[in-house]
Length: 397
Image (cartoon, rainbow, N blue to C red; front, side, top):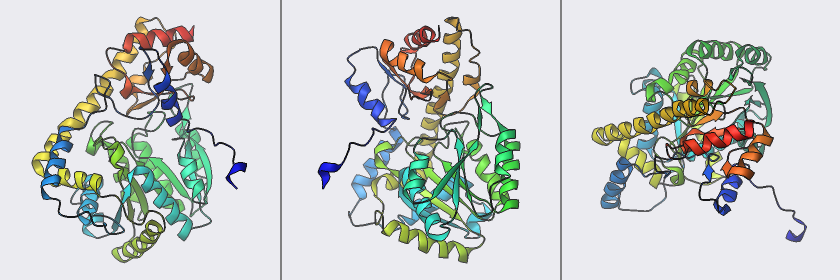
């Protein structure tokens, strides 16, 4: 039976990393996969994470299964970092949080839940969006559509076209929004724009789903949650998919969470029962270690302070690289205006490079970026900046 199977195409992003590993050029640069790197080009284990793991090794007494929805303490702390400890959603019991294998796992549980409860719903994704978004929702059997988001000429959110499209979305459909640090463009909604979008969702009966993968990588933990808070002020029901891969550096631990907010505590409990069925028929229950690390750090005042300081260091380095990138490109006398790169937030920048230029970067200079022109700013260092900008200037000529 298997002899009739044709090879599937390589993942657009992870496949790029495989090609990078095989490249013998000592000056090669990988700006494709969304992984934070420090000034030495390494993806570090945070000191706060190391300390939390040491504590877990000393105190862990079992490797038994977690509950279907994961650690209760983890869920409570996840809710607090998203909404704030005293938010009315939490005090009223309106939130149901389940622990998931990373942010992708949270999105898939959300997709399965929507397919189970609202099978006719269409999920609306920004154009452009993370390339795996349509795959995740399509694999769950959901219809997927897109709305305009980015004005490539202005290198900014195309808000007028976006709103014109959102106003035509039927009631009962799902609108996926990037909570902060939009992937791949780095262009986020302003607070005023969040107000407009959230108001429209509430008025039209559209269910917001916020992909919140980069909290703390834009302007700060609280600052990056502004959009979530505005949605919470307008919509009685919405979903938030959280990831702790980036802000805790827990890429291979697969620590994530899906939070469902309902109109009241009874509705939240009923929804949780369906979320648990979606989990049970998929991966049964979540892995423990990553969630235990997050819970240990967030539950200890000293560890949390240390983690927030490390998070600030990562965030500041990314923003520093943005400014250095712009300055160095200008020194190369690149004719196009690249100042927008310094205004973007998060790990990614939509560079405006064409697919042909992306191919030329790879072939002539061993610089690897995604075919769309998305660049992982977190992969830049002061050591590779001159080489990178010289290469970009070459392919732009």
